Amino acid sequence: MRTQLLRRLDIKIIRISQFRRYARNVRLLEIETVNDRLFILSRWDLGTDPLNVLDALTAAGYAGPGRG
Image (cartoon, rainbow, N blue to C red; front, side):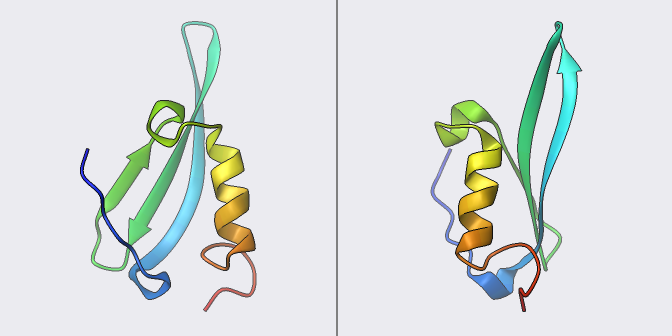
């Protein structure tokens, strides 16, 4: 996977998708950009739970209420 730099204005929405696979809950972080690109990142890609990353992005102003 290559490094991709996204500015706040590049991001349309950041969300978590969750589903069951092999009796486990799997979470993915989805980042949709204004030019209709979709980045899907797993725990393995991020090195931590995607919820932790979403919390950090929200705290930094990339997602959530008050953005924009």
